[in-house]
Amino acid sequence: MKYLEDIAVGETYAVGRYTFGADDIKAFARRFDPQLFHIDEDAAAASHFGGLCASGWHTASIWMRLMVDYRRRIVEAARAQGEPVASIGPALGFRELKWLKPVYVGDTVDYKSEVVETRASGSRPGFGLMTIRSTGVNQNGEEVISFLSTTFVERRPQQ
Amino acid sequence: MSAKLYWEDFQPGAAAVYGPRLVTRKEIIAFASEFDPQPMHLDEMAGRDTMLGGLGASGWHMCCLFMRIIADGFILNSSSMGAPGIEEVRWLAPLRPGMEIRVRCTVIESRASRSRPDMGLVKLAYEMIDEAGTPLMYLTNTQMFGRRRVGAAA
Image (tube, rainbow over all chains, first blue to last red; front, side, top):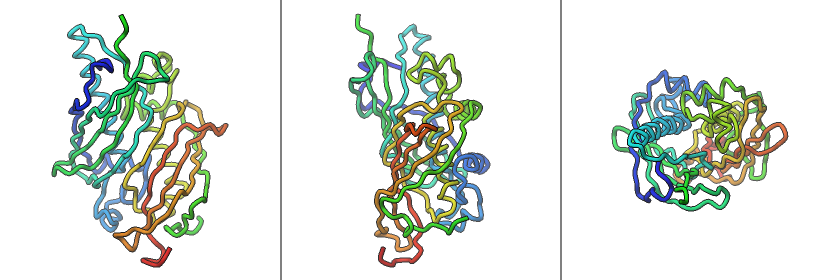
């Protein structure tokens, strides 16, 4: 990760993509969100969704996993170049999370995150806050998830 | 089992507490290994050097535990049609291994759907709290519920 001062609004990260399988959707939902339209094909077909679809928390949690893996690759690349690595996290939370379309069995979601704001933090010396808008788009080009999240990012050390 | 809940049953000001749910070290690490493998969610020692000050659950794990608690608490016994999103989540304090959590739910407002006469929308505010009542997470969202009487006045 770059220091806060080196991050520009508008920077976009190609976080990664993930295909949601039926077993995967049901296993997640049985643990955390066992509503019938997430765990049972027949009930889902009869529901307003018209087919088995992933819990929205599953769609969001997969973004987190892909983002952690993405950041790890960035950090490794920076270390290999001998560049300093700023620390990041934790996040304060998120807002305006929208589940815009259902994620059905076999859908592939392509996630991106874009920096929308960076600012100083009053509470944490040495850190600032970065807000990103993350989105997931399915194979038909339809946005299925969108949210804003704000995370602490280390500032460039004063010389 | 109490009577199934419909949109009409969510009156502004009504409040309830759901849970408890004991959260183990094992499940915190299992969730993090799968979805959020950052050091502070996987390892006590690594967590000590971070702002979490020790091992704490992923914020997304807190959201998923919240979902399961409200699912068992009332969603599965309701005409829930899912939720279009979450207005806001604030992670206020770490969820540590061994904590017993509850979710306090308050109905903020209720309105009929303009586009679907069989559906109503309920805005809810939630707090995840520990044994002492300390808030760990704050969440607001709008949930869609089927109506008991389609198209009738609220």
